[in-house]
Image 1 (cartoon, helix red, strand yellow):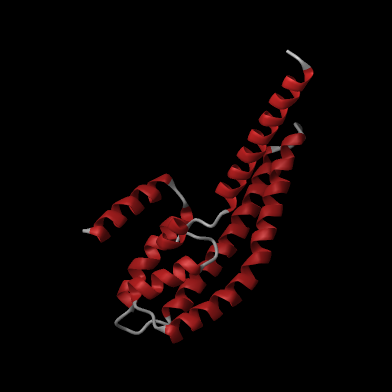
Image 2: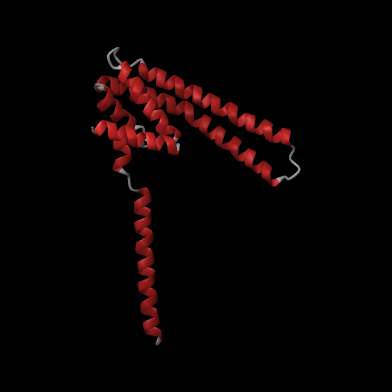
Length: 171
């Protein structure tokens, strides 16, 4: 095989690899419409749309939810960052084989405490959202929130329940 033939093959292979990489980037970075349709997007827009469609929130209620969400996210970001740092410190204990069980348990308890604070904030946030509901909307909101919480948990059991709930909605 001569050198120009090898060069052409290498150029073709490089172009194919480049196109494959671009395709992979597009796949992972492109917004997925099915997440926002189900309310599973991280932006919070999915929940707003769910409240609009399933609970019947009007424009004024949506604006209030968006305001409450913004306040909530400002509170939550430092809590999530702190929890992540605490977990990182916890797993760094693996580097030291002489770490005692009591140190490990104490570090794990600290993670639990920080998670408790986050869960209490989330609970309060959903409670605040509920105050935006009219009395007629509250039962539907209560039902929708339970679905949203299961989605947030991200358990495989939750995804199976979600499939069942989506099937029930279609019927």
